[in-house]
Length: 285
Length: 273
Image (cartoon, rainbow over all chains, first blue to last red):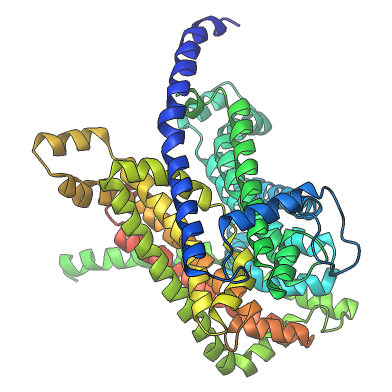
């Protein structure tokens, strides 16, 4: 409560500089983006590039608008041409999030096990490095054979793509506690669990969030790769179906939607990090 | 015995002790790997799981032994596509970062876009690349280059920016030119960031090449995986994945070794040794 008063003054300054920051930081990239899109549009129009090879941005925007305004429509039959993209987006998002959840919990579990036991760390490390070094994409066909065209193969690919950053960052975070703080905890006879919950866990949070921010886009990529190999719905499936029938504007629409999804999820993690880690120096600075 | 030989003998005993300690340190790792495969084998035999669902490791190793020459041949295509793509992505990324470091307007306008474009799932355009570039190496090279370009660019710039302000002030005080500051100061500080991107990119480039091959290929280990999956020849497919796991681990170890060599002067390497 007492810290609220001194925080008022900086807040005023932050508000003002943020307004000026919009003009300085947002305008140049927007202009660059507009120029790039205009150049792309001009190139396609001047060279008369056929729409199935490379559509102009305006064509993509038209298709994207059509696909979004169609609303939440599941496909009428397997392999039906896409009517709307919102349902596919929902499917891909669900697959990615289930995978992210599994990957995060598996990563956290092994991080705790490996920081508590030197033997477990050394025994598990080569297996984990092997899994990480194997291109997970190569495993996607196996999971499709095991689980069919369900959500599971995509979620597992997403989980395999995301567990490693969580694991490594959390191990680093749990190890990298301030030695002075640790000594203090020991001097007041804190138990192992007290040291874990009150020192190691808070210390791990910034590392955990860094991994999470990376992982939201990795989980999306995992889900998409799973869908590319075999699926009935989802944006990845929509893209493959559209590419096969040369509906290239739909391919680009799918990529735009996936990128937007990645940006939104990354921003959400940044927002959550700011709320949770308000006490940490990186957020206060 | 003279004093010199005794003195020489002492460190030798010391190193042997060190070797013993290192052996003792590695046995849990060996145990872990062996246990993993033994449990897998026993589970398969105990439950009579058919080989087309999950093959036993002994069967996978046998198939890998038989198929090794052909897999190595196919993998050379994958490695070539990933390697060329990685080289292009890295070079263009570094050139872009240097340009942005020299022209502030470029950095202001393009860096935020690069941070967003880093999130584009380029694997999704793999089906499109087949239409654009056909069935040879080119689509895989382009995919690997696209995937690796943005991490290099973003990390390189982040490294350029993370210069110690004191060092920068010192360089300016002795009248160093912008170019000198870039090559002698900023380039050095960006090395750890660059290597971090490179280590991730080796795996990403390989994955990109394999995705490209899953979709359209005459050659490559991705094509092998796709074909064995379609034929339900799961032992051969697992053999291909095992092959990728072994080469992947070798590449990771090689990158770690390279990092220690190149960044020998950097504290992150010096303190872990």
